Image (cartoon, rainbow, N blue to C red; front, top):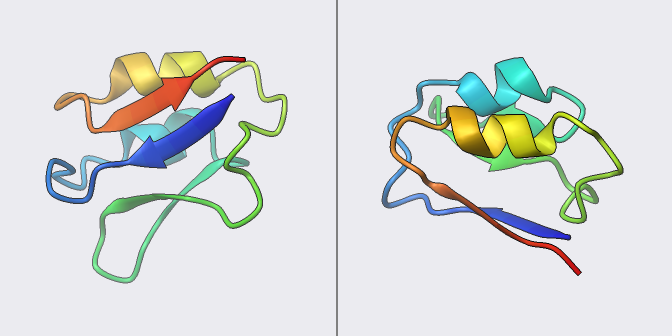
Amino acid sequence: MSLSIDSGLCIGSGQCALTAPAVFETDDDGFGAVRPGKEDGAGDPMVKEAVRACPVRAISFEEG
């Protein structure tokens, strides 16, 4: 799995960090970010829910 957040789309709702805090965080400007070293999803079962919860679909992921 490979995760990324499109900073041009992110509006800083924080749903990713609330849903999967072990994988996502909020940066200094209040926007979502993938935690360093967690770009593979870290085996967190809530990653897919975090992707679904993003109101602007700024999170992309590829399974494989």
